Length: 359
Image 1 (cartoon, rainbow, N blue to C red):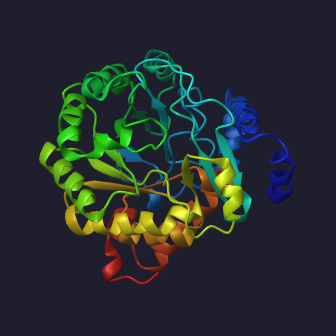
Image 2: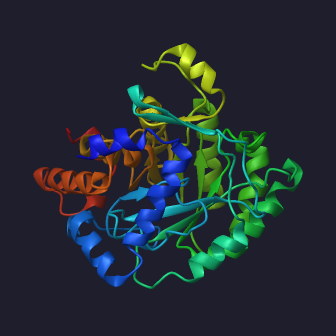
């Protein structure tokens, strides 16, 4: 049924259908009866999936990645929709419109997306207002923060600190995004010399856990350097990975892809590299940092592979678009089956066990 609905939705421009679908999600969970019905249909409640990660209790490991709920308008919707948590944003200190449309494109043959949204959002103050209104008892919410486009790189640390101070007290954790390809110069901030003062400024601004989100296009040496810096500064973890600027290995015709232009590619095409980065990070710092894996997760088997490779938490965005409203439930139920089949009593016991456990 969802496959048929997806074909109908794909007749509309991607950004238009995003707003319509998001509006329907918010409406369905706005009032108590709707939240109750939605939860009964979409939430996989199972104690084996629960875990405590960097001091925060997560009912289940799959969360909504940043980019869908840019302004925290749906912060209360994601729990009833089946997610164990969500990242809102990316939020910048100043409101900004993002890049000119069209800026979001589908690659159905690859079950992928290309976006060059450019951190379009209403600003940190607006997002803080939405977060301040959310009810107690919902799933954890992380605040993903980025650099305002008009701010120079030299002033990036102060710009991030503004967002951190506004959102940190209202979120369960903060993610520093220096890895989107759609803000000029942003990825340059992943260099350790630039990243150190930026992360320190955020750490000095909040009392909640701080993580950094990295790109899949970093060299292995740069991944190691960021990981070592995260440990040195006392970060809670790393989110790996963001979208990629690479276009190799796609099923979609190369000329068609070229016409779409620049942007970050998400979905299955980034899955292999995302898993490689996760494994490298876990081998280097997995016993000292929490790792959140995102990029190309579509099935419970893939989610299980990420857990065994060292991911304490998982995220998805493109998989949700192509997988539909039951996607999170299917993955969580599949993970619960895997955990019990391999003799684990909790998710945390399986994290990083890939060297001894077969999928």
